[in-house]
Image 1 (cartoon, rainbow, N blue to C red):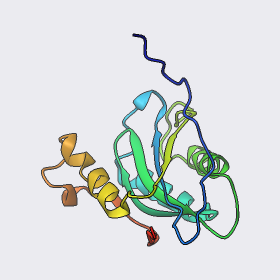
Image 2: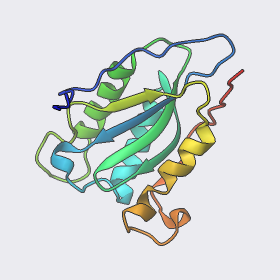
Image 3: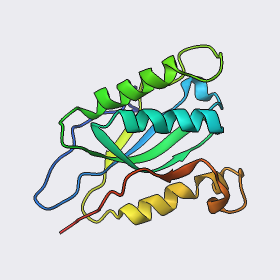
Image 4: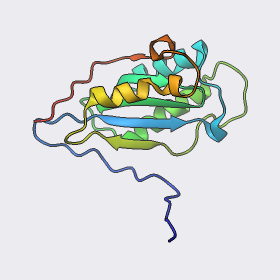
Length: 157
């Protein structure tokens, strides 16, 4: 049996439900999975652009050598997730701290809205173990390139 694989991820707009938070889990990879992100300069640049791109709020995040995991939620404005990601990817590319071939980022990204029964805390605990699973540290709390920019509250009535 042949399994069909999508060439590009489907980016469905977040679905708002009464009294339920809208939190999206996002993964963005570097072009050709180049290991250029897990350093102070790149991490600081990402944080700078996530704060500047304030249409979506970044909650918890982990910067890995070749990809970024983060949780985000829409702010008061209604900018589509795809445009928001494009904005900060373009900004970080323009201001990249070292001379490397462009593009920096893969064109696509993966996103998934947390749904009923999902737990932001459970998902975060899985994501923050990524550096340990990849053998980069012995304990996840030793990984320097992680944090939380905004407190995203998960409400699931």
